[in-house]
Length: 350
Image 1 (cartoon, rainbow, N blue to C red):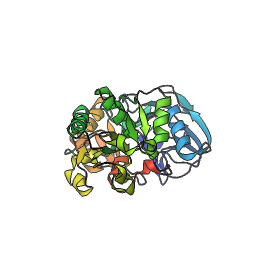
Image 2: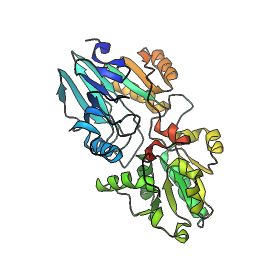
Image 3: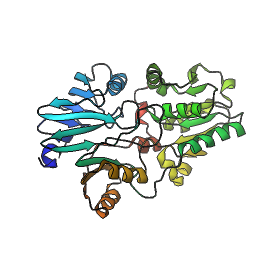
């Protein structure tokens, strides 16, 4: 079977004609396989959704229990047959519940990565390379300039600032799903034991992480805190709240922002970020290239991000490669670096 017979591009996104399903479709379809819960990949209104247990729960939290006509849990690593096609969900290391999707039929295996990262994250299962014939990879940071520093060093910068300015609240802008909870877990690993405060837009998803027994320590709501107790505290919020009226309640705050885009210092200056933290939930250039090598695919399809540079690199390695040019997929970190935080959509105010 040719790869393009197994998966093809349609206006709704990647489609498998033989299995009659789409992967992360951008509009309602009869059957959708969802890689993870970020809003540009997980949309409401499908006839049926197949995803990991955590992704289904996250979609229900964000869209309500009736977000799809029917749902089915995909246990990680367990093959599922759909119309003569075998699919299997494997860990992607992006956020809680995130998965790659392997699609196999007629001796051809295609792996759709969804969003993924290779760096350590105590809040989700690590990425697992899956051997395949065709690898569909994201390329959010698909330029050689994007090489993320060790996340422990970035957390060290945050904690050093807290020690240096014990009377100033540290407001950390972070995407509501995944990034915020990862930052809390990382400061705990670094030995920070004080309460961490969160904006109301982060409460529902953070509570879900806690329900999954992910260790985040003591979490307090900003809405229930006295102004005096916020001095010297670490406070997580949607990036859009850093410049909102909400931020005025804090005593002389230090504004921080956690994103891979903080590698571009002009973005930090543009947003008035005093403490940029280069912490990304996407693979950088080196990890994208390493992953392509590890999966052993002879053909690579590149999507949503800096497609052309990664396609060029693949061809230099002797691989067949092409950009997919799919529309409808934003970048959660890109959105957070702008004026809109999609993770906060519909969330209650703090």
